[in-house]
Length: 140
Image (cartoon, rainbow, N blue to C red; front, side):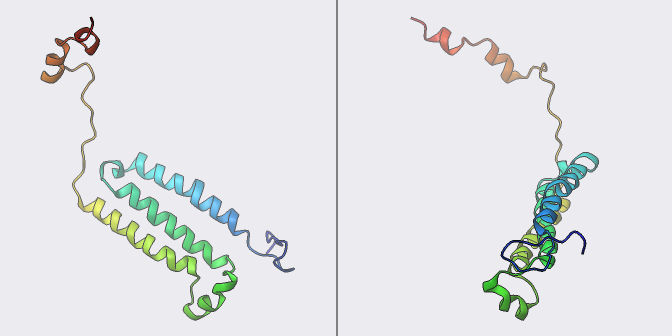
């Protein structure tokens, strides 16, 4: 692989620069995914949907990058026996939780996000407007 990196103390063979993969996927790629969901869908009006998308996306990206990483020395046997690295096993609950939050967000009714116009007076605002301020009440 032409973009492989030889890490000091890790042997003479070039390895995938998994730190760069993680940075690209868990930074700009995840941001663009969440921004697109917020901007172009109704996700912002469905509580839990964006949070679920973040958790699912982060877990999925971490899971995928672990395929090109070398397992930790103390966990090589574990990875060989289970077929997955420890990092991938730890991502499984994150992916499931993210999927659950997305499902919950899709099943809940949409939330209206309009804010009343600031100049619109409500009975509470009118009654408070006629009251003296704290300083006016307590001046000596």
